[in-house]
Structure formats: C-alpha cells, structure tokens
Amino acid sequence: MDVPAWVWWLTLGVTITVLLLDVVVIGRRPHEPSRRELVAALGTYIGAAVVFGIGVWALSGPRYGKEFLAGWLTEYSLSVDNLFIFIIIMSRFSVPRELQQKALLIGIVLALVFRGLFIAVGSAAIQQFSWIFYVFGAFLVYTGVKLALEGSEDEDEFEENRLVRWTRKALPHTDEGEWGGGKVWVREHGRLLFTPMFALIVALGTTDLLFALDSIPAIFGLTSEAYLVLTANVFALMGLRQLYFLLGGLLERLVYLSYGLALLLTFIGVKLVLEALHTNELPFVNGGEHVSWAPEIPIELSLGMIVGILVVTTVASLWRSGGLPDRDGSRASEPTE
Image (cartoon, rainbow, N blue to C red; front, side, top):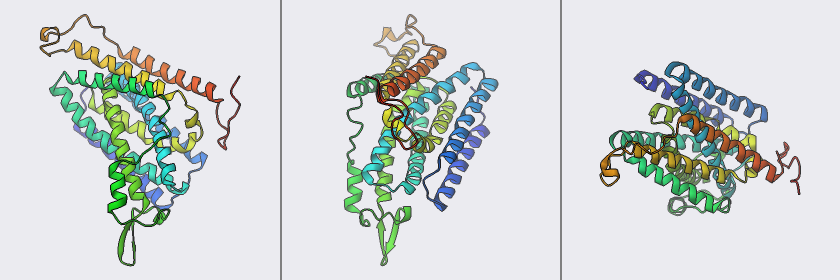
C-alpha cells in the first residue's frame, strides 16, 4: 500500500485540528454533554470511519479495506475496555461531572501520542526483524490467557502507581476537591499549586501507556500497513469520550467483555505466530527456512472472528446482566431466572 507523504500530513493535520476544536470548545464551556450532543458526535465519528474504510477499499482494494475495518473494530473494542479503567479512575479521584469530559479528552490525546510512538517503533521493528511477530504473538497469547483467568475480578480495583503517588507527595497541591475549574495548576498567594487534575493526568497517561502495549501488537496482527494502523487507532479513540457518557450504565453490564477480549487477543496472537512461521528466518526454527505447512488465516476469517466475538460477547453480557439500562441508568428488565 503506497501512501504519499502528503496523505500522512493531511491525516495528522485533520486529527490535530479536530482535537484542537474539542480542546477549545470544552475549555471554554466545561459541561456534562447532553444525549443529543453525544449521539450527533458519535454518529459523525463512526460515519467518518465507515466512509474512510469505503475509500480505502475503493482506492487501494478490498484487502486493505477489510484490514482497516478489522483493525478499527479491534481497536474500538480494546478502547471500550479502557473505559472501565477510566470510570474507576474518575471515581477514585472524585472528578466532578462537568470536568470529566475535559479529563477524558486529555486521556484520549495522551493515548494517541503513546500509540503513535508505539506504531512508529513497531513498524520499524517489523521491517527490520521478521521474528518480531513471534514476540508480538507470544505476548498477545499470554495477555489473552491472563485476561481470561482473571476475568472481571479485578475490574473494580485501581491502585495508584508510584509515579502518581510521587507527584502527590513531592509537588505542592491544592486541598483535595479543589479542582481550580479544571486547571492543571493555580496560583495562591504567589505560590504555584497543582490541582488534582495534574495527578489525574498522570494516572490516565500511565494507564494509556500500559494499554498501548496490548493494542498496537494486536492491530499489527491484522495489518502491517502503518497508515492503516494509525488511522484505525485515530477513529477508535475519537469517539471514546462520547461513548463514555452515552453508554453510562451499559458499560457495567458488559460482564463478559474481558472474556471476549481475551479470546480476541489470543486469536490474533496465534495468527501472528503463524505469520512468523511463514516468514521464519530464525536458525533454530525449521533450520532457518520458512514453514510452508503452517496454516494461513485470511483477513476475511479474521474479520468474521472479530465481529462474531464482539456480537456474542455483547448479547451474552446483556442477557446475563438484565438487558439495556434505562436513561437514568437503571435496568430495563430483570435477568431471567
């Protein structure tokens, strides 16, 4: 897939422009968004992703169109899992509702930065070392198995890491609960004080960094095109803030999401290992020769697996937890005995 330099710059420019518009709008009027505002924004982002995928299909062929769609769905599902942790962090920090939108936007910007760095490093590593697929694949299988064994037991557990604890102890802060209108720092009596927003940004940033370790190897298992990897991540993260407020109590009802993601990561990990066998150059594996008998998983099967896993996980979760929540977050129906 030959992507001209101007397309890269245009993509980055549009992404930065959208983020800056969000920063300006939210910075001027911090608020809890209305349902109508959320639906319109989320529909715009999803529609843009679909149109982009159709454009890739038309201009570069069905293979790349399918790879983008598979990557986007995978990144979106992994991003939804991020929301669980964001909810817990927001709760631990007691973030006011009107400031949560700003905090989420900061988290999304940090996620884009970290994933951009990981994409650049991952793409360079893939071009130089074909055996890196073994590493990515083994890591994803390990992560998937670990996630399946843990299930949802640790979803409500969040412990501040050392960096967050250090910022709280080493830097002068305002009293807990004094958010300064969402500012990162304020001046009181000529003294610079950090608000809880600063510690929150550190918590969100370190969390995003850990999630990128799973996310980037997963999508490289579906496409080796760095441009598709980048754009799939951008479209997946752009609507995350609206999804956080729109779904509300629905997120808590996706009780089988961790198991679905575990299966998804394991499947992609196995796919990566099989691809590594096809391009094998390690001398201690098959004498350094390619393993021609290893089965190849086509992108159509990968896409079908991704859609199937997400649909089954969502339906099973909603059935188990009692269906969709009402507007106030309560259950629409009680679970069947």
